[in-house]
Every structure is written in structure tokens, then in C-alpha cells.
Length: 279
Picture (cartoon, rainbow, N blue to C red):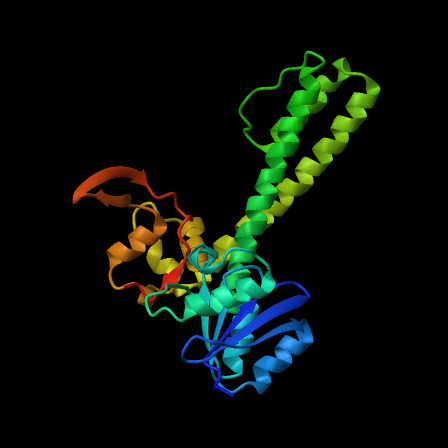
């Protein structure tokens, strides 16, 4: 039997598809695994390249595979898609991941440690709460507008908005007033959670040495500094500062046809995955 060189894994919540290939790229085995079986496989296999797509739970499995002595490559799904042959299922995806990992020029996603992921969770949670607060406020505006109650467009702060709403509720039916009161309680609760997360982020920026250094730059405050810490890959993954700016989406897209460069809009920030091993 040929020696295992690359193990391509299609991750999921409960059932995993694994595809093992040898040095020549030929498939040695295909397996369907549960979570416990996959964990046991990682500990039993000799050190090899373990390739996965950068998706939900990927960072957890990367850390586990590294602890077992494997060389792990986390590949953006966008770069795996060209290797999928015709039909699509978990086994085919696992084989495509293994084939993509065999390419020497493939770009991989920088793996976050647990602390960095925890910071990212705080930011994502704050983003969700802010979005929910906006949805609730817009719902209150829309419901009251049906009864001729038009609230100011700008939201100075949640408490002022809630006070203004309660002052206008006399003109609405009692059922509507009670429903809007429930909305306002929810808005105030979500706003309290957003404020608590803001405090946590600012305290983290004071404790973090890199965040303190970043705040010496014009226009960088505690929120921006901690966001860079949470989402940006380590600086050693970039050859120069320009590569980091390109990852952030601060440069125009490059397109050249017939040796004639075309001017294209900037790449939207966040649309480029965190890449390591920049060529």
C-alpha cells in the first residue's frame, strides 16, 4: 500500500468525509467518519499533510491536527472549487481538497489561536446586537407610522428614543402601545449588551501591547485596533506592508488584458480571506 501523503477532509457537524492520497496524487482510501472516529484517525495516523476548507469549526480541527503532529493546510473554499469534478458530494469535496493542497502555489488561510478567535466572537456578537437593535428601532418606526406617529430619523441615543416613543403612545391603540413597550424593553436590553461589549473591547485594547501601539497611528482607536488584532493574520504572513494593505482591500483590483492594465474599483474589505504564504 502506498504511503499516505495528503489527507483531504470535508468537515461537517457530525459526519466527515476523508480522502487519502499518496505522493503521486492517486487516491488510497475514502472514508466516512463520525466526529469521534475522525479525532481518533488524527491521533493514529503518521504525520502527514491534513488539508481542510476554511469553514465552520475548521480552526478547532486545525489545532487538534497540529497537536497530533500533522502539517495542516487551511484552504479557502474559493480555491477548492476549481478542483471539483462534475458532480458534488462530500467524498468528491474531500478529494478536491486533497488535490488543491497538493499544489505548491496554493494559498492558505492563517489559523487563529483561541484568544484571537475569542476576540472575533466578541466583535461578531457586537455586530449582531447592533443589527438587531437597528431592526427593532425600524420596526417601531414602521408600526407607529401606521397611526400617524412619525419619529425623528436620527437616533441620538436609545434612552432618548424610548422616551420619545413612550410620549407618543397615547395616540395609538392600547394593543399597539403594549406591543411597542415590549419592543422598547428589548431595544434597551440589546443596547445594554452593546455597551457592555464596548467596555470589554476598550479594556482589551488597554491591556494589549500591540493594540496600544496601533492607537498611536492617526485615525486608529481602540475598536479599530482590536478589530485588526481579532481578524488580521500575523504580519509575518506578508512579505511587505503593501501585501497587508491588499489583504485589507485598500488597493484597486488588478486586471490586465492584452498587456493593457484596466482600472477597477477597490476590493471590498473582508472579501479576501486571510492568506499566508504570499507568493
